[in-house]
Length: 535
Image 1 (cartoon, one colour):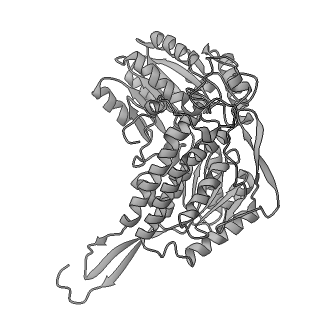
Image 2 (tube, rainbow, N blue to C red; image 1 turned 180 degrees about the vertical axis):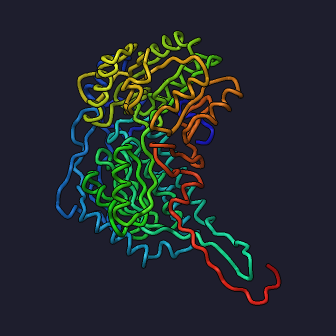
Image 3 (cartoon, rainbow, N blue to C red; image 1 turned 60 degrees about the vertical axis):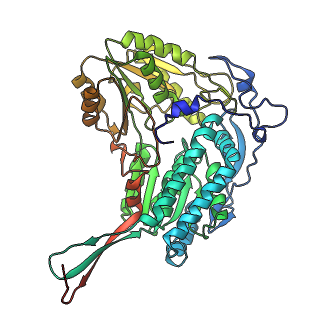
């Protein structure tokens, strides 16, 4: 994926895949829905033929029912209908999973085998994912609502790339020999941290699995992972493949369940050595508090955002409109780093508004299993209603509704691509994370002004800058208090590029070499030297 825009990948056509569709349905690429129209593609959705085979908890290498016997439904966001009932884990199941992970770390082969052997297992896993890519992509789209083109062409290949990247790191993790004042041999050891608790969100289930599990395994740790209750299916599927690749029992354990029960139990567990969480800022505060009140385990947090996308006066407006559209509407707007505050220079503002409106109206919404679809449904009814509330707030707050503003169709959780102009900084839609297909466009006059306004947020996850002037780009790059700045591009997520935020967007970094430090302890070892030949 290095160096290629997600938008260019998503614009390519997808070949038909008969393995994914039931008989009597049109293949992928055969039909699209019209803009802002209710069609059979939405009202009568395609039925994917992929089977849901894994709905239990995965503990110590075995699929098990929850101790309570409870299950919860996971829904098809296209219809609101139940896909499957999944085992509902709670504190007792988390305790069982942590015990398995602890035993696998303290007594098992994973941290004791050579790093090269761990690397080979991770590489075999990546190969198995490629072989099963169509089913994995279909499961991800079915459970989440993102387009199949996005799942198959972008996310599954990126998932594979991330695991191969960390497989390459496994045998390159090492300490240092450190010179000291005196006759001592000093070395540092980089040791696996132990049992890692990981809590992933629903917007990118596969990729968040990869971002967390990949570096943790490469460093020799064991894991207890809690999936989001909205999207538990793909993690269970790929975890089965990881065990087929040779992962020892107890190294990866998966508990499906709810945040206040399973998530809280994992965050506060005394035998968990490290915690990683991706989700909302408010939940991140709770997770951090639970970790601190238990055993003071270190925590990495990748949280919310309200990222500025700054269009400068010298920008090519057509290109800027397309990139700003992508920055916001990608993944149905359900992206923590979405360019959700579009700042446009006053000289090009009116032209930009008109073209942004037309682009939103022409965005193709419909069944995500159809080829050519740009936007599927939101993940669930709660998120759907939340987005509509924000749209109502924008209208009532005085912003100008340029496009959209309503649900799309009468079934499922589809929302029309929505654009607001004349947005002010103090409006709710300009301050809070909407997490949906709602573009807010603000006007600015001077660079210093837009720097001040862009930074006047509790978030600091990412930013986009669209300009032809390298000096302007450099000035904004250094002034914006965010973890990622994309210049004339957006959402470039190479496996080697670190990702994380400033301020209340979290702390720590995912991906790249920086993520390895999340899962390692550094130990200093000092040994006296007698009559050394040199120091």
